[in-house]
Length: 463
Image 1: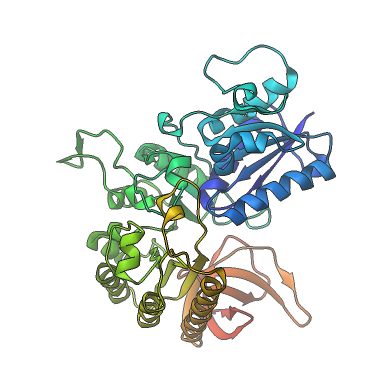
Image 2: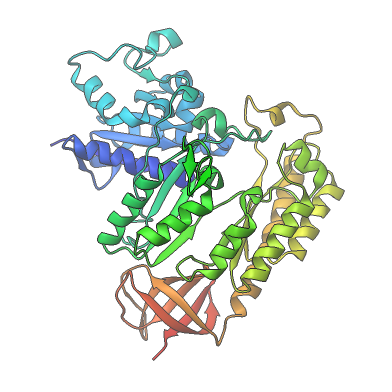
């Protein structure tokens, strides 16, 4: 029997797409191979958010061709959508399937491999029309013409099947000057509420206790859904109404909400998260910059004082919540004074972790041609400064829980230490934890934190 292997690069949305592609192959009767070396079809599900991500994809193509020269390499994802002809020209590539055709990827791969039958007209752009080498066909079309949304639960790893991630929204209607993703994933589109509820109920029936909902622009869920009336009022559903429906129509023990843009953290959403014990106390709010001038050049839709107000409201409502942010250094024209505005803002606000990125110019975006490029050395030094500041804030936040009770869900199998056994866990407020003792995975425990070691809390189960 033929087998497949999928390697995902990048964000949660890409991982969710990979899970849906795996389902496609299984529906066609194929098994998942243990590694790329044993697979007939190797799918590289790529990212294009940075130049480095694209380099990783090219390296994976070379590595796969070297390790498994007889396999069929199918390149998909955002990189495939951006430059399909460039990828098709790489040695060893069997097919390039853009985001526009991901929903049919497995069928495309098997049909092309068997060389039987024909493709429906308009299904793909022939390689010859894009000067690609014979055999490496390209299946890409206008992403904005597509409305489907791939959705399948994603699990962190084979040994950590406790916190499935469910993508419920894709695409983005924002036009941040640095971001290429809208042109590669298309318009914002949502999984209908009844489908979200059905997916979560299936996970609950399979005994999963926590589900993470995610999207490219998660807070805009529902705005594309055509609903003449919703909940007794005109217009499409709101994001917080989806959360209420999940709580009302499922018995899910814990719902975790991934990244939500600042303008979508309404007072009602903050209060809902604060009041409901079934919602994890964890808010990820992208910042990008604390400088008003930089935010304007980025075409972001909020000002620093708006952002500060949101974070302060979240902390006031949830004193022990995890609060994270994405921050970018080295955006074109970022002066030392503008960077200092960002650094001071991060220092002042109660962040518990940061994801810090260095600006990477993406072809076709307005930022790629902006003047006053920041030297790489300077941008990386600013990145280092913010990462050190983030590490200090995270460490202080974790230490504040020593001696206090926390709830946590166990993630993995039991680890046998030199002196005693322990199991990895994650707290409600997004802190890594090691719990002493032999415990089942996928269980919630009330613990007492005893200390901090190696970036994780050390705890015992409360009697």
